[in-house]
Image (tube, rainbow, N blue to C red; front, side):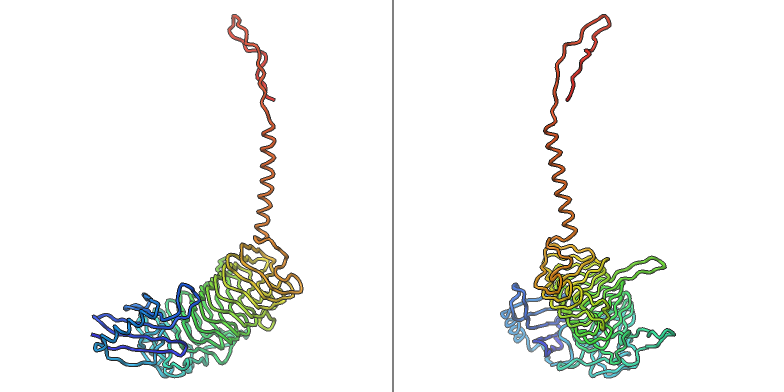
Length: 469
């Protein structure tokens, strides 16, 4: 029968996790209070029932079901041996496999974790590292805290940084995720107090996976060449910028906040190998979350960036933040940027307060994208010298000394490309109309002649034939 029931609660919300065994199956019941802007989802209790695999949640909403569930639990209470635990994050982590108190215990727990099996390791206190923590290939590690009051910290120290003969530092990291490994952060803080510009808090190798559910990253940001998914947490005060996504990286942001970085919030790059000719573009998709108060700009994109939700706001394109043209307070684009939703607002730059589109940039604005209340000297909303295609979307209430909303000025909602196509269609219609007009005026006249005469050599054709005029 059931072995135990565990209940957890976090200070950032009403969250409970029940865990029990019944009929040789493990059940985890996750209850949390939901605040939603979706009109189809009423505020109240959200309940998720999980059998063995946390990825197969079934969620129900409503107080009635919650109360009924508690009544059922009460009826079967003799089957349970209740215990209270405050050492587990209710969102992801589940029951910890190991609890650690120092660097040695942490590294042993990681290295001894079974391959390709999710392992939860709980920090019982702040831990300082003397060297990089490596998540090896085939390991699936979740790091969480044993505190409901705060996030315990993983603090980087001497992170294998050395200076080459040209005095550029080699890039180290507090945590390195190797290819084929998975790291999940859910309720800890990772920081690098030394603030080396070229050192990352988390470095993700190609084919590695990093998932940030909840927690804090500071001092240095995330360097990604694998797969990075951010659904919560904060990345802030990182000297080299919040997130660097290489040409081989895929970064998805659906929640959380990237803020208060003294450089760019996100740099999404491309790679061109001059020897082999190989090109690769980083992929950044933003469906939620906030990128704000960064001092190089919100996003510097030379890869592929798609924005369907979320907010990029209150960023400044400054020389000190590494934006040497001081352009693109919200987004500076020299790759492909498609905006179908979300909002770019209250950003500042010299050129392109909201968006600066470089000559080789391709910017597509459509559907519900909003660019508003940005400020610049020229092109308050959008400054484009590249390809700008606009189908719907809203650009309004931006301010500038010249061209408050769009530079160059263009009131046609479909943009330059569509304008050219429209002119082509109009010309085609005129030419087609002229063609049919002159064809209608063209007539055929038939002149009847005498029949051919008969001779000894047979019928001879007349010297006259039907003529068309």
